[in-house]
Every structure is written in structure tokens, then in C-alpha cells.
Length: 214
Image (cartoon, rainbow, N blue to C red):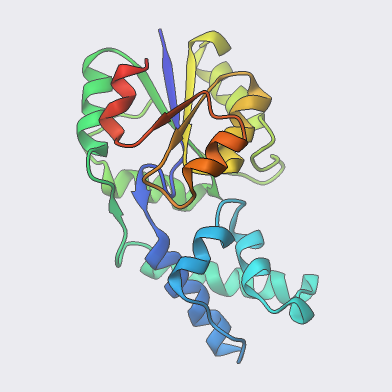
């Protein structure tokens, strides 16, 4: 049976506005400069700690400051993660079609695990994912392939039967490191050229285009 692994942010749901609002909130609280929403397309993708680090002025990027603001970000984001976030057009029909055809589907995200589970449950209450994983303590973040290998092992699927769909270079690198098929989604946060440059085996411009590949 084939498995489709999805990234979350920028692939299944558009979280950019809530991430930007949350990060700007903590920056403003500490009198640091804030950023326009489009800047966050580059800041996100490697987990919350890296997001905070990238948003801070270079002179303020000490471990102590990053760790403190990460905690504040998480507290605020947990309360506001669903203010503006929505699934991308075509995602729910795609997920329904995949389940109808008997595919296994899962989520593998660099966002902290609790938030990933909460957001998936909230935005896809009628979709039965076979596995949902976010970043967990003592596990390396993507592009390390650990999360893909963990998913394959738990769901008893071979690399040859796995497709990984994401919107960033991190996702393409993750798929390449895991030796699974890398599918770049252009509706997310990064560009088609970035996806191609980092090893996309396929490029899709709409969610339902995936059905023509698998």
C-alpha cells in the first residue's frame, strides 16, 4: 500500500498570517523590530526556535534570548494558531480522494508535536490520518530523515511506496535524504525554483494534481 506524507505549514494549511502575527507580537513586546508577513515565508520551515532566531536582529540572537522568546511565542501562538489559518483550496478533496482510493496518509512537520496534532484535528476532523507527527524532543528536525523513517516503520511501508509532499527546500531535502519520492507544492511559502533546485522529483501547482502522479 502506498503512503503519502504531507508537510503541514504551507502544504496542508496556510499558517503564515498566524505565525507572523505571533512572532511580531513577541518582538514588539521586547522592542525589537517587527517584519512584514512575506518575510516569514523565509523565516519558517525549520521549527519554532529557528523562526524566532531568524526574526530577531542579529545582535540579539543569543541562546538565552532565543529560548526565552520561543517560550513566549509558543504561549501566544497556542492561543491564536487558528485566528487566520485555513486549509488550502483543494486539500480536503485531495485527502478524501486518497482515503477513498486506499492510500495511507500522514503528516510530518517541524512544528512542535502538540500544535501539529491540535491543528490537524481542528482543520481535518473528518479525515482519518494514519499518523500525525510534529517535532518531538530527542528527535532531529527535518531535513534529517528521522521523521520519515519513523513514519515508514510505524506504518510498515517501504521507501519505494512513499511520496513526500512539501513546499520548501527543507521538505525536498528531507525526501531526498530518506530516499522517497519528493513532490514540491507551489501553492505554499517558497518558489518553484527553490523546490526544483533542492531535488523535487515532481512539481504540482494544485493539490488534486497529485492524483496524476501517484
